[in-house]
Amino acid sequence: MNEYDTEIIESTLRWMTEFVELPHPVFSDLPICPFSKKARLANQILFKIERFSALTEFDRDSAIMKSIYEFYN
Image (cartoon, rainbow, N blue to C red; front, side, top):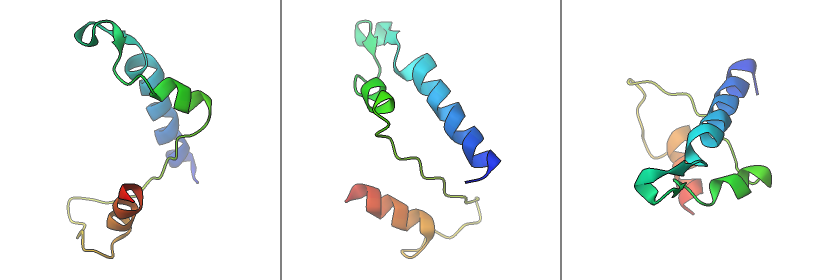
């Protein structure tokens, strides 16, 4: 993991704590995701960073498609 990966993960965690986990009026003042805080505090979130661009071909054997398939299963 490099410094850029760490920055992405920290940014995502900040977004979770400052938005996803807070009460929201659209959801009757419940958090957007009622499970995210518990999973974050229990360190149960797997962060996997896959680099790609608009020119990346997403064939069945590409790294990102393998990650999606792994997550799905």
